[in-house]
Length: 584
Image 1 (cartoon, rainbow, N blue to C red):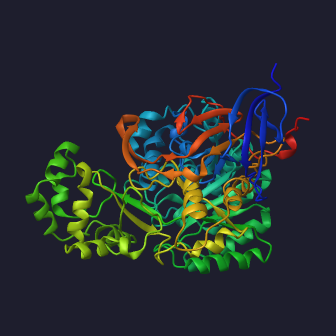
Image 2 (tube, rainbow, N blue to C red; image 1 turned 90 degrees about the vertical axis):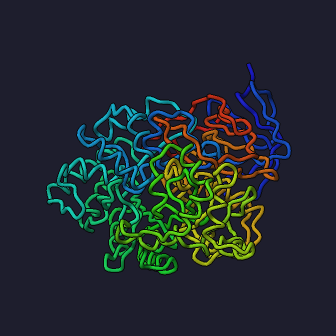
Image 3 (cartoon, one colour; image 1 turned 135 degrees about the vertical axis):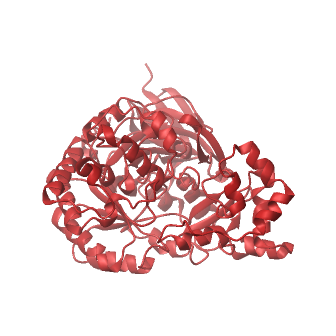
């Protein structure tokens, strides 16, 4: 019998710890790494990694596959980009606990907040659960290409406890709060890695209502955090507008000090946040200097809306002429859009903002008229574009108006053109502000939103972007070392969530690995697919350069194509390194 199941031979090993790269082999047996360095002996399968980087599988801690994970085994698009572990249930939205009469409400909440087609969720999910532990059991029944873990989501918990009383501004009773805390404690004991909530006006249900956590009091949130403290583990994750009068950092610090648990918040340059990013970081560090453990979740690039005629948003959605064709089948829409008379009519109209919800007018204007913030997406698009690449600049160079230039751009290639609008995290027109944060232990790389924002955002490729842009190709600022970039999306993300069994290439760790042709790693052009249940649409993006992705010692992807293997499962609770016995 062969000594090993798999040997990766002759690669450049970047082990996930931040240590210098080295040449060597990796031997795997029974799903674990058992030897690293010069490996003698044979294996049932060998991979030649000469000239390739061998790194741990990426651990993505901010995704929204809560519905998709119940029916989809491939788990694209994250799995296409070397991700082997996803944590979902972020931002307070998810599907458990779920009273039978609240299914449609929960779907509407997810569709509004995360732009996942409600028809796809309604057709794809079987709802063979009610409680959160039952939801975990349902997730455990379906093997996948990746491991999945989840938070207990505030929206679902509130809806389960308050029922029809769950309305914007609803104030739960002390008994309600105690029930919510009990449900969260039960969920964490059953295997959830934490709890999540959302407190931002950007997050609304499909009916335009604020999500349940937006108006929750500090007392409610602290009581829920204490429930996790009773268990002894869990991450408290939130997205918030961080209004100064809310004193968010005050209660986050108090909760973290009392429970000893980390509190993770989405740290962004955002028009919805009163506090500039620098103030957010300063306030976090003031609490941490006083014994708290607050962590800033940062994005790797501008949080960009990809706009297209068939997407969820584009610059002309508020023009009356668009509204006359908005509900037509695509073939009829396209015929109209390519008609010069229709184009002239639409471009002559003003935007109608009368139906824009309060609090997001700035975003509506940026989408419909922010030509100095919008960029043409060509085949070799640089996600850190300069001002010369804006719609305004390119229109001026061509001698046309920005809206005409944008219209023609969207009509390119059979009306499948794209415009990129970094609505968040690009206020300075560059990514320089992220350089220092990438080096800070109180910040963690996250916010890919894998599986979400199906018609507007495609940031599940963030790990690939980090290697391609931040390590290899960046032209407008400092680059990162490959060793540091790998550590940021392996060891750092895994440890924050108590996943001490992965993110490192060393004996005894789970054999989650990527074999990467680093010099030829490249993000490909996004496209709009209609492959979700019920024909639901989603933006997808692949990459070249991943020779192999390995999950638990099994090759799941070769050259970007799924092998059909499903070694991934459900993660229940923290996974400790001392639970593994390294083979001799």
